[in-house]
Length: 111
Length: 113
Image (cartoon, rainbow over the protein chains, first blue to last red):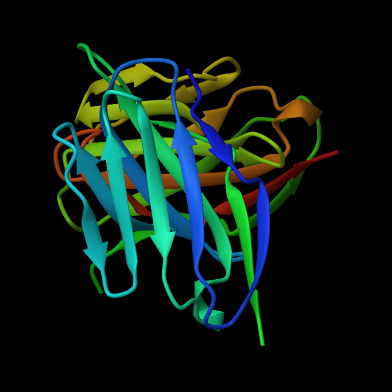
């Protein structure tokens, strides 16, 4: 039930855009996004609930396509501070469902 | 300051020993979680707790024991440590469940020799 993230790693130049995808084989109730910098704790970015809403914070936004059981994280005009590993987590539809994290996408932004 | 703190930050121990990792939060969050993070596996849930005296297994509970006698504390015990339990352990809390933001502690890096 672990979601699949792609790509596994991406290198960008500052100012470029990136998309990170998260997909599941099960019907999803919610998708969660976290960022973890090297040697630090994961930090919450956003939650998308069933309903297909798109959320955003400054230049980082995400969408949730519940029909396809997929979510995408969009990083626009990337900054050096965006570097880190991005994890999606999913809660499948149904009772007693827990949050399950993907294996992460490593993003490196260079000058 | 309010937050979630883990101790110790680093721990080295030997196989067969018992070790307890501590987690304390000051938000009065109902839910608390323990994860382990290993290369290639992401974050895997060990145990979680919905309230004091209510705990449940996660994805990888074998070899671990938890308790939660007070809302703010959620210790994790490895009763007889094995090398496969060498990992980085994160404690987290959320206000009311899995569909709320989780706030993570700084982690405990545990090495078992």
